[in-house]
Amino acid sequence: MKISLILAMTALLVNSCVVYSPQTVDIPLIHEKNDVRLDAGLTLLPPSFNATLSYGLSDKLAAQFYGSIVPEQTYHLQGAVGRYQNISNNQVIELFAGPGFGHGHTPVNSTGGSIDNNYTLGFAQFNYGTLKTQKGNAELGVGIKTGYLYSRITEAAIEDVDRFRARSILLEPTVFARTRGKHVRVSFKLSGCLIANLTNEDTYFPFSKVNFGIALNIR
Image (tube, rainbow, N blue to C red; front, side, top):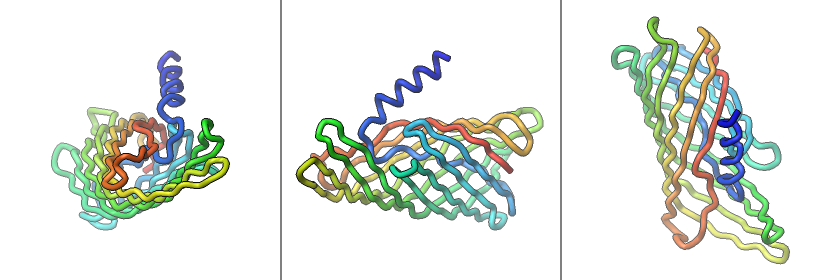
């Protein structure tokens, strides 16, 4: 109960006035052809619904599609293809790459206006983790996504509108744990975010640095 209260208070503190939040994309750990993962759940920062579909196209290649949405406020969509390999003792490495795009919106109480961000993203992501074995019931892993983020940000106050474009480097790590069940497992995720502007260095880019997620992982 105390942990839930702390997370809720953290959400209110770190997620005020942001137009980009870390994405809790599933780290699928595909290990064979026709292997499929459907991961669907909720995130805390901001409260949103998200889903990831991952599929083993061959004994080396996989594809992944992800989307998250806060109705009438924000959304993020991305797709990727990549290579995977089961290296030893049910340890899997994956390397995905692809494009993404989205929209972020937040009100600004101090001005009575709002900030909007329409963005595109080119990214690559490296994943590493361990699959469930007969001796263990947990899957654990980490993913590190990095990419080039191009943003078109609009700040609307009561009487005027300011616009600027930002080119940034994004770093987005994720750790996860999946437990319980043979075909349906519960997945817990913690994602972080760091955005470094390449242009408009003196302009504040409103983003959240942390996100929490919980989902059902079906295979």
